[in-house]
Length: 235
Ligand SMILES: NC(=O)c1ccc[n+]([C@@H]2O[C@H](COP(=O)([O-])OP(=O)(O)OC[C@H]3O[C@@H](n4cnc5c(N)ncnc54)[C@H](OP(=O)(O)O)[C@@H]3O)[C@@H](O)[C@H]2O)c1
Image 1: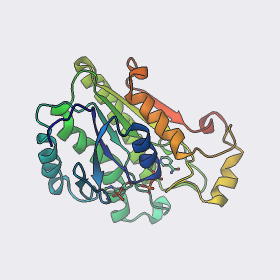
Image 2: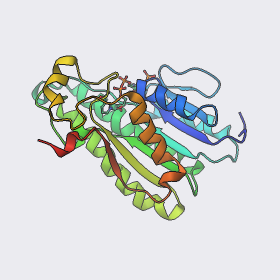
Image 3: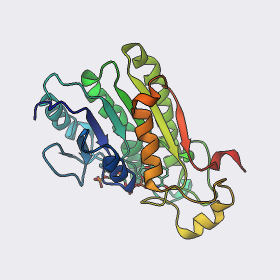
Image 4: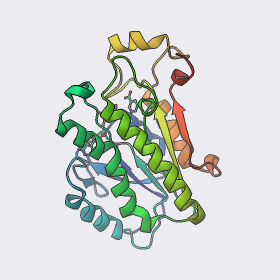
């Protein structure tokens, strides 16, 4: 699996609706190393990010080594999990899994990929408006803590890796009509607060990620971009 000339993207969460939309946007020009439980193909890295990094990091590094000297142009951490329980009811398992998959996996992934990043490489971490805001019937604080942690990680790495020409940004989706998106009843309660009065299509989040990865964002780093239809400007 030596470099074949195409830019390389290392991504988690590619099986989600947002991930599928991103793949459609980037393929076939990009070569995608997909990391997750439901990934297939020669460039897939089938791993459970809910397990200790020691169980998957070596496998990822082995796949990266097969790229030879080829640089990794982009990294997207899109894997995420959310549990509906309120904070008091959140179990130790739910807390650990939420932090591990949403936040810690990004850190271990970026540590593993760092030797393959160089000038022009770009990282996008998928956070959430839940990093800033608590919905009345929204997900537990564990999810908000993990998504806020991603923003801290993003800003520190933007500062640390900027001198090497590596950009690090985040997107903060609001309500997306996919996977963990709002149930119709939650959406009815939320709709009045979304300026555009509709949830995002997965493609709309994917396009924002692709923008931050691309040349159009070449002077943007350390930014958390809300992709929320104006959810964060009303109360
Ligand atoms: N939908 C929304 O309204 C919304 C709003 C704000 C932010 N987001 C964020 O956007 C991202 C995608 O959300 P979604 O709602 O589309 O989610 P989803 O359909 O539930 O997909 C979750 C993704 O995370 C991966 N994942 C989960 N647990 C994993 C594990 N143990 N190991 C490896 N990968 C794992 C899954 O991959 P595999 O199944 O292949 O393992 C899947 O691709 C998440 O980060 C989410 O927090 C979503």
